[in-house]
Amino acid sequence: MNNQSPPSPQVSTWSQRFESALHPAIARFNASIGFDIQLIEYDITASQAHARMLAHTGIISPTEGEQLVAGLEQVRQEYRAGTFTPSIEAEDVHFAVERRLTELVGEVGKKLHTARSRNDQVGTDTRLYLRDHIQQIQGHLRQFQAVLLQLAEQHVETLIPGYTHLQRAQPVSLAHHLLAYFEMAERDWQRLGQIYQRVNCSPLGSGALAGTTFPIDRHYTAKLLGFDGVYANSLDGVSDRDFAIEFLCAASLVMVHLSRLSEEVIMWASQEFSFVTLNDSCATGSSIMPQKKNPDVPELVRGKAGRVFGHLQGLLVLMKGLPLAYNKDLQEDKEALFDSVVTVKACLEAMTILLQEGVTFNTARLDQAVNEDFSNATDVADYLAAKGVPFREAYNLVGKVVKTSIAQGKLLKDLTLAEWQALHPAFADDIYAAIAPKTVVSARNSFGGTGFEQVRQALATAQAKLANPKG
Ligand code: ARG
Image (cartoon, rainbow, N blue to C red; front, top):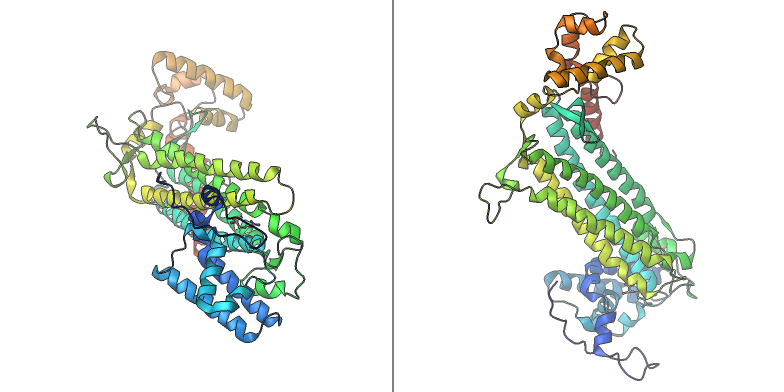
């Protein structure tokens, strides 16, 4: 944001009801054109549908309808060409478009606002905007998933320590770990699709709050604009921002997932873990410490999660005390939405690139990591349990052997067969193969587990999802 205040608007009176114009500072305070200009193309499209409906129902003549539609198209072309740049005098995008239209087409332009209010207009524009952007975010999610999948395919048999409480727990396939994020992104994609269905409902024709005295056809405009239905209650139509809150909720969950992955990449890139190396195209240096390579990308994603959650919270608080129907407070919904859309898209794009070319898994280090701990202890207990020893008894025995091994500076694989058999006679020579990291991972072949067979099946299912445009 720059600190320069916008120029003082040339303010005129609202109507003959008013005797003096707004104070210039109040006009600036009131204006939303600085940000709702982003809705301009949606505003034009919705206005064209409204004009067509006015002609279709005989509220205006067919010629007037055509003049309005063509004039609005001209406003669009001027905006795209950069020859129409609405200023703060217009207050908001709706006034800006209507005024320019009237300049272009003359008196007939003043008919556009028949049977309509800015209240149903802004609700319509915002839904059209969100509809588009939900689909764009879904596209970004699909790209992110595709890269996760590519990486997972390369690492089915690469093992990585699995953690609970950030303590080494059981080794897992790296592909399995990456596919966990694929699944989260899949739910995000589906959730956005479900929200889309509720966003895709038209409030146009709700008027200011109570409907209109004109014989409008709300279903006609809804159909022209590709909405699946219309709001059944005009008060609800102009007041509802549930759709925006739901979207911010889904956007927040996308950010939660990206932020968790970011946190892992940041840890993995630390010298302590050294599970990944950051590649130069996605890492940054320090201005003072020449040896450093910093994970700025995942750190920024982790940080930006906070602002999207903030927008969600902001909108919830914005709504909670509002009486029906429209209140100017609602103008505050837009920056929250726009910023969240931009942020989520940018984060998805950055994380996709990071996974694609920004990190290299250090497979030798990962192999060392899964061979240097007691994360096969459960498998020793499972080994005994499979031979008929009650699991709880086996668990206690293994606890004991872990304790003595730690004291002796040994790992489980270092114990001699005599030592194993002293612990329990059921141990045989096959214990060594049974506790090798590859065996323990491969053995977790329950549905959804990390066993290689399961992971290969999960990869195939994931491929099929991405190949099907409907998911
Ligand atoms: N700029 C306004 C908004 O974003 C448009 C609706 C204004 N309606 C009104 N009754 N003042 O909410």
